[in-house]
Every structure is written in structure tokens, then in C-alpha cells.
Length: 99
Image (cartoon, rainbow, N blue to C red; front, side):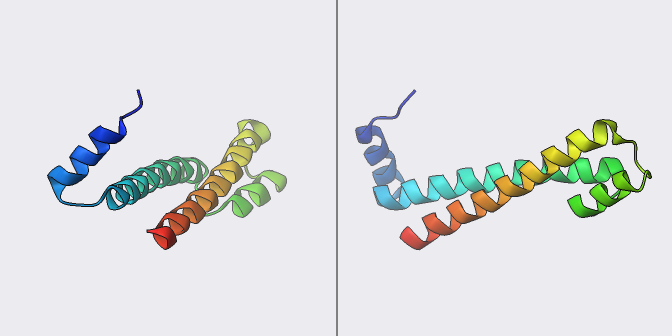
């Protein structure tokens, strides 16, 4: 449900900040929380295979130290999560520069 501009303006006034500051702070909080969740999911995969990186997981799969299934699927997910973290980091920088 979209929030009206009037509601945003009222909230900004209630807490003593500008609408722009409220918007930037809200975006940053959202992005940081999203980043935290993605990192947590990434760490769960790394922990599952007792590895420190996607590269190590791939090497251990190729060497036969870890069964291919479902490790290959998890490796793809891990790489996607790492890419998502990079995108979120760029978005955070964008908001910080424009705030």
C-alpha cells in the first residue's frame, strides 16, 4: 500500500527531519537490512560445506571432496548472492552520495 506524500511529510515533521533525509534514511535502513539477510544466507551455504568462499566450494566439488548434488545448485545460488551483495553495496553508495 503506497504511503501518501502528506503522510511522509507529517512523519518527517513529527521527527524533526526533512522529507529528503527521511527518505534517504529509510532507503539506507532498507538496503542495510536486505544486505544483512543476503549475507546471512551466503554464510549459511558456506557453513553447510565448511568453506570460506565460492571458489573454495567449486574447487572442492571439482576435486570430488563434496558431492556434486546439491552443491552445484548451492554454488550457483552462492554466486548469485555475492552478485546481489555487490548491487546492494552500489545502491548504498548511490544513496549516500545523493543524500
